[in-house]
Length: 122
Length: 171
Length: 344
Image (cartoon, rainbow over all chains, first blue to last red; front, top):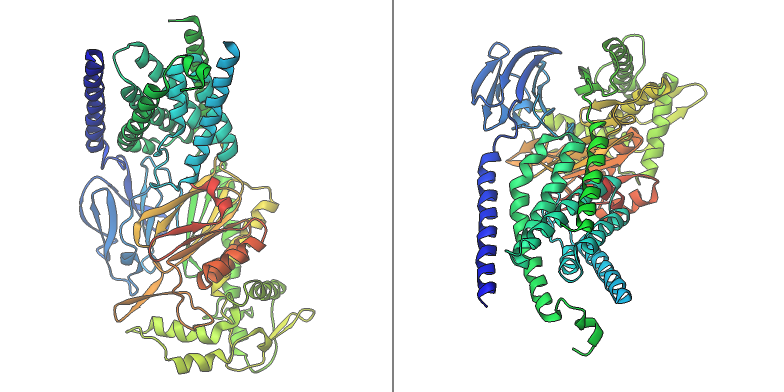
C-alpha cells in the first residue's frame, strides 16, 4: 500500500513536471517561427528594399505609391494607389515564398529566407 | 512455457495491429502530424510488463513496420520507427528504475514517441519549422499516455503479470 | 543491463544512425532560380528551377517559357488584337460574318476546349462568352452591380458550340451568331502552362515549376528527389492554410472565391459563373484539382466548382489519376481517397 502510494506521488510529480515543461515551451517557441525571415520588395524583378519580418511598423515603398505593414511576423499591403486594390485585399502573408503583388504598380512583396515548409500557396 | 510465451507474443502483436487499424479509422482531429491516441501502445506496454523488454521491442517495431506498409508511406515508416524505438527504450529504462508506475511510464513513452517522430521528420524534410510543434506534441503525448497508461494499469491489475492468467483459463 | 537489452539498444542506435545518414544525404541545399512575369494572362507568372542548374541554363529556359506564354497570351486574349495575327478577339469581332483564318495551334486549343466541354457536361464552356461578358462588365464598373436575369437569359441564348464553325483543314473559325463570343478564361492558363511544361519536358528539363497565377505545374521532383510542398489556403481564414500537399510531376489548380471576387451590397461573389444558374457559383469555398495535365486540371477545377460534390466526385472517379479536394463554406474538407498519402 505504501509503495503504491509513493509510486503514485512520483508519477504525478513526473507528469506535472512534463506538463509544465510543455507549457513553458509553448510560450518560448511561439511567435519565433519566422525568425530570420525577410520581407523583400521587388519592382519588376529587381530587389528594391528588404525589411526584417521581425520589425513591426508601417513602411512606404515604391515612392509612397504603396505602403506595407509588418506586424507579428506577418506583412500586408495597407495602401496602394492602383485602381483595383487586389494587393490590399490579399491580406496578410507570413510563409516563406508567399507574396503580395500589385500588378499595376509592378510591385512584389515577398516573404523569404526563413525556415519554412511550404513552397507554394494556392 | 516457451510455446505459451510465443502464443502470448503473437496475441499481443495481433492486438497491436488491430488497435493500429482502429486508430487509422479515426479522422485526424488536428492537422498536426503525430497527435493521436496511440492505442497500439496499450499492447506494447502490456508486453513490456508481462513479457519483457525484448518482446515489447519486437512487437513495437514490427507493429510500426507493418502498419506503415499497410496504412502509410515509406516516409511515415521512418518517422514512426524512430518514435517507437525511442519510446520503448525510454519506457524500459524508466520501468527498470522501479520508481514509477505504469501511468508515468506510458506518459514518457508517448511523449518520447512524438518527439522521436518530429525529430526525424525535421531531419528528413530539413524543416526546422517543424520544431515549433514540440510543445503541442508534449502536451498531447501526456494526455494520450495518461489514457493508455491508466487503462494498462487497470488491465494489468486484473489480468496479472504472471503466466497463471493463461495457464488457468478459469479466472 | 542484460545482454539482450544492450543488444536491442545497439540495434536501435544503428537503425537510428542509418536513418540519419540516409536523411543527411537528402538535405543538400539546392540553389533555386526564379523569374517572375507580369504581363501574361492578367496575372503574375513565375517560373522556378529546383534542378540545381546554372544561371545561364535557367535563363535560357525561362526565356523560352516566356516566349511561349506570350504567344498563348496573345492567341487567347479576347480584349485586344495584335498586329499580324488573328486571335480570339478577332474571331469574336467577326461573329456573324466571315470565317477567320487562325494558327493551327489555336484550332487545336478550340478542339480541346470542345472536348473538355463535353467531358465536364458543359460546366466548363468557352462558348459562354456572351454571358461572361455581362459579368465582366458588371465586375469592372465603378460601382459593381449584378446583371439582370433578363439580360443573362438573353445572352444565354447565344451560347454553345453549335454557333462555332471549325474548319480544321482550312484552319478557320467562324461564329455564326453575331451575339455569340468565346471566352477561354476557364481553360487558358492551364493550357498555356501545360504547353510550356511539355516544351521543357521535350528538352529533358526536369525539376522546374511553372506557376501561372496559382495554376501550378511541376515537372519531375526537386533535384534531391523531394516533392514540392503546396499549401491550399483556408477560404474562411485566408492567412492560414487548410491543407498542405506533397506534389511532384503534376499540376495543382485551385478555384476559389477568396482571391478573385467582387462585392455588391456587401456580399462577395466569386469569379466563376455557373452555366446553369447564370450566376456566380456558390457551392464551395474552393475546389482544388490535382492531376498531371494542367489544362485538364484547370478545366476540372472550374467545372467542379460549379457541380455538386456527388457529381464532381463521380466525374473525377471516372478519370484516371485525377484527384480533387473540396472545401465547403463551413470549412469542411473532402477529398478523393487517393489524395490521402500526399497530405501532410
